Length: 112
Length: 113
Image (cartoon, rainbow over all chains, first blue to last red; front, side, top):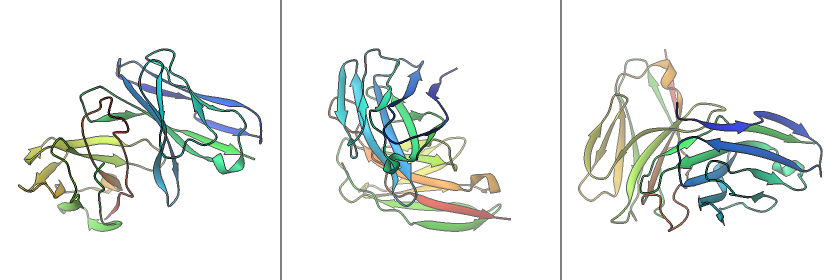
């Protein structure tokens, strides 16, 4: 079964404590991306990757890091989380030369 | 990337047909039109995609006029479970050109009994 798996689904953490949200896909997709969704602001892209070792900034990359060491994984790293990074995060994947994307179940992050 | 404009919200009743129109005046020759559906606290889900004329699948139909400057998502006989936010996206296929998936505000559809 085609899947995009995010972990954890829910996380409450404190300001400044480094955290990683993982994203894994089993569809051999080249494209992977992270979004955050906030009330009234819709879905905003944080980072995306077109292939292994290739990453690019999206619209709101400040405060985030990503890596793409393997095709199937695209972790989102918050080195020093702050309360304004409290949000619902989604990982998405897609195949090259296609247009539809597949989204994970979401990770609800609260930074206190 | 072509910008899209959709109504912020729409109301309907069970059993009715719902048409959501998206405006994309600056659509490029290589751009496809894709619609996603999102339920609260879930990731968006692909519904339908088209390039021109009409596309139909088991969930919806997509109507695209000849000038491609707009498109209409048609949901036949909606039910309460169709209450969701619907996003219209316009863009080229995923390739090394970069950011291919930019979501606008979407249309919040409320289906009433």
